[in-house]
Image (cartoon, rainbow, N blue to C red; front, side, top):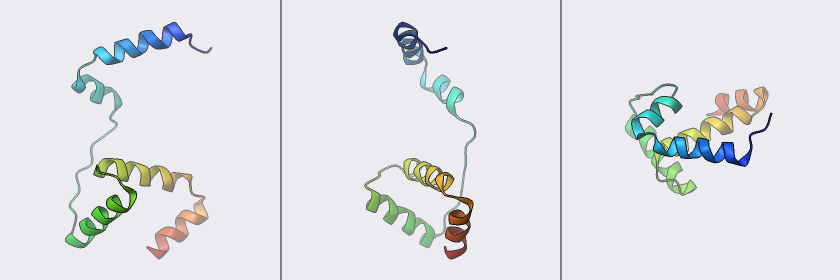
Amino acid sequence: MAKTALERKQEERKRNKMSEEDRLARLLSRRLSIDLFHNDDAKLRRSMQRAGIEEEQDLISRLIHGADRMTDEQFSEHIRIS
């Protein structure tokens, strides 16, 4: 059953009242902590610049979603070439 505009607005107000910590606890699945070699970091920064993205997390999230939209064949080929 679809939510009414009133129900959506009430949920939005409730979300807005949450503290940042509560909001993250609700949304986050897990945290990744990785070490990057200089060459990898340079490529990450260059990719961010090319895409006009300022946050590493934003670029990584977009790459994950883009990879997920690939067919298995496209994904395998991309990983094999990279």
